Image 1 (tube, helix red, strand yellow):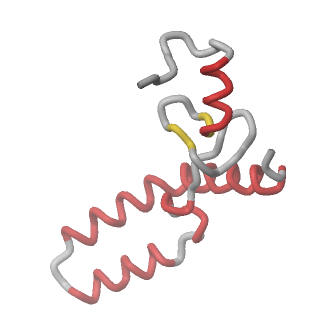
Image 2 (tube, rainbow, N blue to C red):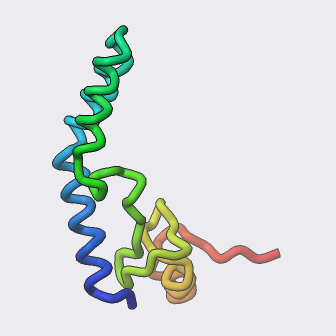
Length: 100
C-alpha cells in the first residue's frame, strides 16, 4: 500500500494538469504560428511561469486499489500483483491465465 501523502500529491498534480491544460496547449500552438523569435521567447516565458506540477509528464499512473506506482497495466488500472491475484480468483471476466 502506498503512503497516503504520495497518493494525495498525485491527485493534486492531476488537478493542476487539468486546470492548466488549455493554457499550455494554446501557448504551444502560438509558438508554432509566431514568426519572430522575440515573441516566441515571451510565450516560452509564459509557459515556464506555469506551475511545474501542471506538466503532464510529472503524472504517474497508480494502482486503483493499492496506489502502487510500479507495474501498472493501463487496461485494468491495476498493478501486476493485484492483477495476478484477481486472475487467480476469477474476479476479472474474460481474462485467463497463460499456460504453455
